[in-house]
Image (cartoon, rainbow, N blue to C red; front, side, top):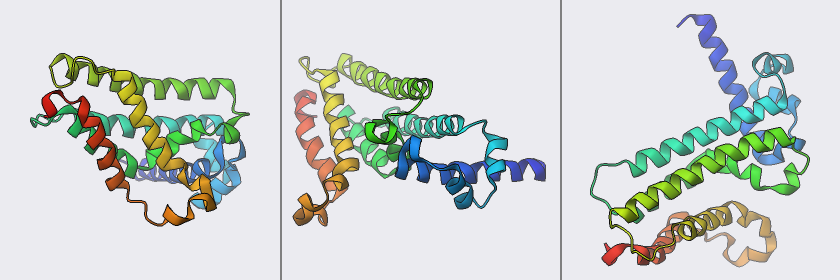
Length: 207
């Protein structure tokens, strides 16, 4: 790869990493291009050389995040090891929780920060998120057909339960002083394990 192309790719990556932080902290509407440029160590013009607008930059951030999430899900669920579906899911969720992509995607869920987001941007991003949920439902449905889950398992409710727990992780800081007695004792893996101990009741024959 030529040096000029390498430098271009490095500059683009610096912009994307800086933009991830800005969008996560401030949301789409309040995110500031000047702040992103400063954090990336580049000019505002350099950002618009790579991206036509803030909307295009945000779309690329979401695309990167959903891509990382899909990779985590695919690697975790496609494992050839004879591990029950819920145990695979437990490890996938632990990986998702540690990945910055999770926080990036939650930007879309913050209606206060994104109430003025352009409709086309919101629609395109929501399509990416919807695909992740559709893939998850398909994965659990296939496991159910293989007999890994009880016949009465409601796949969508299982996915909803997992999603609510993950959203809770991201939003817990919003409670501020209300949770002071416990805020310093949050153990992500312990909570995920406790959640899956309950979800394992949907595993056929307790496997």
